[in-house]
Amino acid sequence: MNGKTPDQMEAEIAAQRDQLADTVDQLSAKLDVKSQAQAKVTDMKHRATTENGRPRPQLLAVAGSLVAAALTLVWWRRRG
Image (cartoon, rainbow, N blue to C red):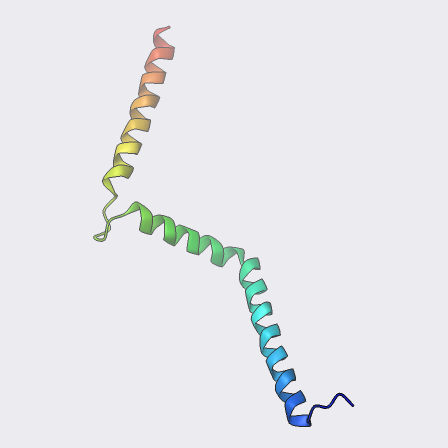
């Protein structure tokens, strides 16, 4: 015999069962693409807006710069 009492073995089995359940939960979370996508969208919304829900000024500046660059490129191509 291994020198463990039945109670010790049961406790060890229960601990291993809990560890296995945690591992399965972690793997399930990694494979849940829809949940990951929703979390990413929520994170992006949080980072792109202020506390009152308005777009961050930095985001507006970048968007304005991109629009200006696109308009300049279109104007330059049509001109030449």
